[in-house]
Every structure is written in structure tokens, then in C-alpha cells.
Image (cartoon, rainbow, N blue to C red; front, side):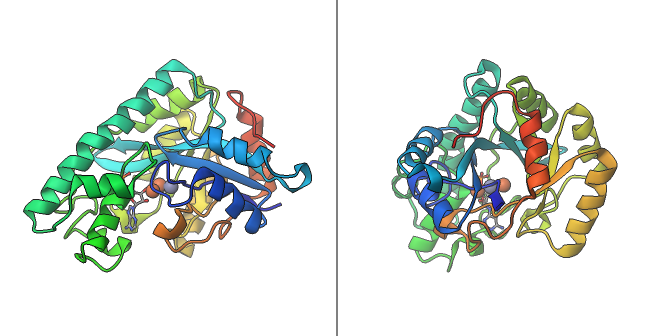
Length: 286
Ligand code: AMP
Ligand code: FE
Ligand code: FE
Ligand code: ZN
């Protein structure tokens, strides 16, 4: 079983359409793929339709999900949510709040970049994010690349430009993760802390915060991730065992916007079963 529980489409900051993501999952030989766009479920319907257009014996299983933008103690962090009821109103309202604030914030980031001498425009960013419902810093990073300001997307994520706390970083509305964990559970979903040790992106939360989230209903930690080195993975595996959390592995695929390949990191069948066992809001699609 090859199980990848974290992938983005161009509905947020990936570059593949949801249909292309399903085709990429087939090409990568995945048995299970989760679509986890930032703060939106807008890609689920297209991905499900693309799946159903495949011959039955050749379909991967699609796990509908999302990746929620959260903030605690001034630190931005991401919470993966799987198999929740997308129509549950309280959680839907919170996703919508974050998603819409991304447009205000995106325009403010572009304004800041322009003040700092980067000749990019909001129209350009909207073109790059075309078809998306969740605009983010990676789209602005692509605009900075187009304008010749930086050489690639990751070079835009320094404190010179878009990194957390960087010159052109403007915060967006982000949910308290304990609140987010409760919203996901109330919608029948399963919350997993995304890349909790990704310290290249900025400060990461303490073990105490993770323990508090576990007490609030967190189900798992994403451990095998490109932004975690081996010591970080070992530490997180120990912490997960102490707190009774399962651990996942996933690519966090963003199409051509990042170099990681779909299926480069995977989740064990046991952890996937534990996830399925806790989900009541939606079913995997196959
Ligand atoms: P936003 O959701 O608009 O705040 O932007 C966060 C997104 O930027 C993440 O989901 C990643 O896709 C991307 N990102 C964050 N840090 C980095 C980094 N250091 N290098 C490349 N991409 C990054
Ligand atoms: Fe992203
Ligand atoms: Fe993330
Ligand atoms: Zn992600």
C-alpha cells in the first residue's frame, strides 16, 4: 500500500488541477491520496469526478481533506483535517473566514513588495493563482520569480521578502489550533498536525502546545516530511507515542512549485486504518 496523505492542487498553492493530481497519483502508483488544499474544499468535486472517470480497478482512493492555517503563541502552524463533513456550518464558516482574508492579505503583501521595489502587481498574482480559491504567498513568490526579483520560489521565502516575519510578510486571519481541532472533530473529521518540526519555515511550537492539542482531540502528527531531518523525526515519533497519537508521512506535493514528488513520503497502512477508524464526517472515495 502506498498512501500519501498531503497534496495540494491549483485550488490553493499547488500547480496541478485536481484532475491532474489524480492522474499524478495514478502515475506515482499511489493506492491512497489525500487532497488537502489550504483552507478550502473547492477541489474535492473535480478530484472525485476525475477519479470516477478512471476504470474501477485502476483507481486510487481519494481522501478528502484540507490544511488549516492556524496560529498559537504568535507562531503560524498548519493543521491537516481529513474526512470531515464539508457542510458542517461552524467549521465551514471558519474556513471561509480564513480563505477570504487571504485576498485582503495578498493585496497588502503585493503593496509591501512594491514599496520594497519589486515590480509585481495584484493582477499578475491573480493570473498566477487563476482557478484557485485560496491565494497565498507561493503565488506572490511566483510573481517575484516572473519579475526577476528572486531566482525561484524558495528564494522568495527569506526574511528579505515573504518568510514568516520577513519584510513583506503580512499576517492573515489564522485559527487558534485548539479551536480548529474542536471544529474538525465536531464535523466528524480527523485532525493531524502538519509538519510540526518544519523549523526552516520559522519558529515551531513547543511540545507542551502539542500535548495541549492532543488533550483537545488531536489525532496524529505528520512525521515523515521533507522539512524534517532524521533527529526531528525521531523526536516527533517519541512524542507521538507518549501522547497516544498516530504518525503519518506525506509529500506535501505542490506540483511544480516545489521539488518534492508525489508519493516521496508515505503513511503506514496501520496509521491510515487508525485515521479511518476515527472519521465519521465523510467517507474516502474509491
Ligand atoms: P500562506 O498560506 O499564504 O501563508 O503561505 C504558506 C505557504 O507557503 C505554505 O503552504 C508553503 O506552500 C509555502 N512556504 C512556506 N514556507 C516556505 C519555504 N521556506 N519555502 C518554500 N515554500 C514555503
Ligand atoms: Fe502550501
Ligand atoms: Fe503546510
Ligand atoms: Zn501543505
